[in-house]
Length: 113
Length: 115
Image (tube, rainbow over all chains, first blue to last red; front, top):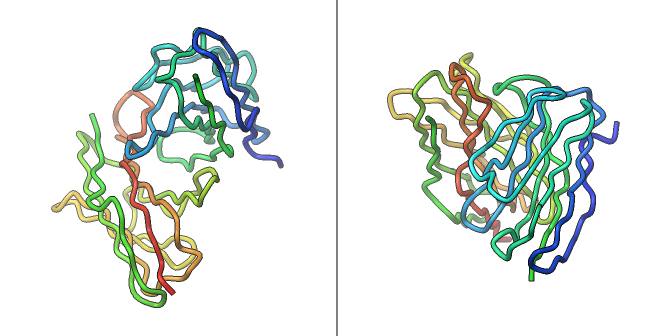
């Protein structure tokens, strides 16, 4: 199993550009989520999904969109990038509910200039 | 709602000495608690978790944590630090009985191990 994969590993955007961060898992996990990691703030939940076709907002959803058309994929879209979205983004998946282990991808380091 | 406070942003220990990372939590319901480790430029990996079974939880690489409800704490310990333990550690809480699927992460504790 590849686990959770994320592409790209690094990305530089100009303010106002849009892009999609890709996330895929091959473990047949129902739950998937996106976090951003900023120094001294831990990980903050952006959006999550409890299954195909179902998504919900996390702690910091503004400026991001998600969709979940398949169990395997959970892309994160930045609609109009801003410097405040410079961060490291992690995708995670888990078998089921909140008591289960999260499996994290390797992360995408995004810089917005 | 739940929240986590990691009491130390940075811990420095000598190789072979004990490690203690402190975590206090707040939860309206029965909590599920986790410790994750992140090595430089890597994703997070689960060290151990507590989900209302035994209060002393053993994890990977010799780490363990004790759930103390009266103190709302879930401190992580290891009897003897190794150089490979140098990393960032996150305490995480979720409310088992709430309707949402939200985990709350602490700000992290960076561990430095001196030779």
